[in-house]
Length: 73
Image (cartoon, rainbow, N blue to C red; front, side, top):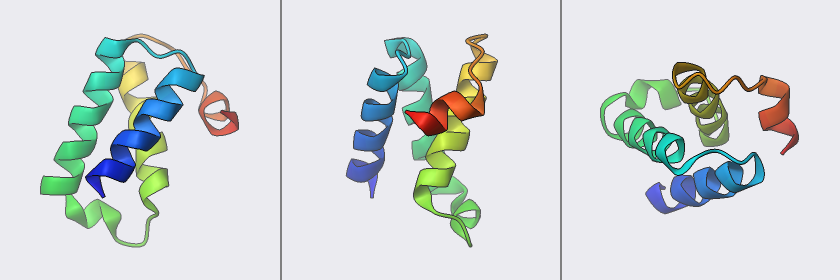
């Protein structure tokens, strides 16, 4: 599962031109979710959590990104 998440985050980061620093923070957040907040996986698809994490981390780093931009990439 970690390998799949890493690949998805890498591909998404490349396609929407996210900085390495932001991409690394997305990865750290996803590792935390998968290890400590497993209840977030209930009734959700892993890709949904990845997309939401990308959106949230980009917002925190003041790299405004519309959710629609993430989905279309």
